[in-house]
Length: 203
Ligand code: PRP
Image 1 (spheres, protein in one colour):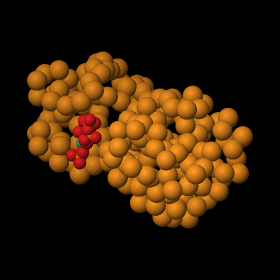
Image 2: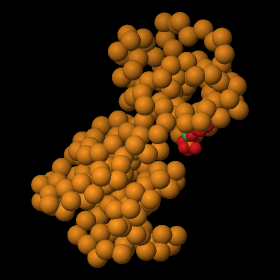
Image 3: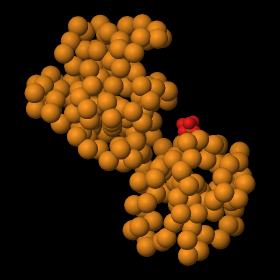
């Protein structure tokens, strides 16, 4: 038996065609059940928030999972291996600010949901930062004077534009990854390898 944890929303929409092409179809996908059966007796699926996928996989509640690279960095990826770049849900983790905003300061105030990635990036540049953790509506922060700039995901750029912000620097390219619980990778190696090879061919 293999349990796969999938991330809700945009990632799920792009994961489903990959699974279907691999021969996995989820039963009753719109039901409120948390654990869903598939057309294959040996595979079950859990659909949860992207941020929780690495936690479920780390603790072995799911053997494998699909989540964004951003979420893996925030989680620390303890107890999980990254097996594949699925090359879906592509976006960029970017620094953005109001146009012409001067960002040369001793301590830069940054609003973000992505604490670890932000810390790593500015540590490497030896720039001191004060990080303000927000869980959404991050693009509002510079406008209301909460921060000098933001670090957030950018896909089309529409959200930045609609809120009068411009991209300043690309921190990294993000895409969804297939991850596995390190213990399950040993105990269920044959099943997991077979699935990974199938998905890899489709990518
Ligand atoms: C993400 C991100 C931006 C937006 C960028 O938010 O935080 O707000 O998408 O996309 P765009 O460049 O195509 O406009 P999401 O919709 O995932 O919701 P969230 O704010 O809950 O993270």
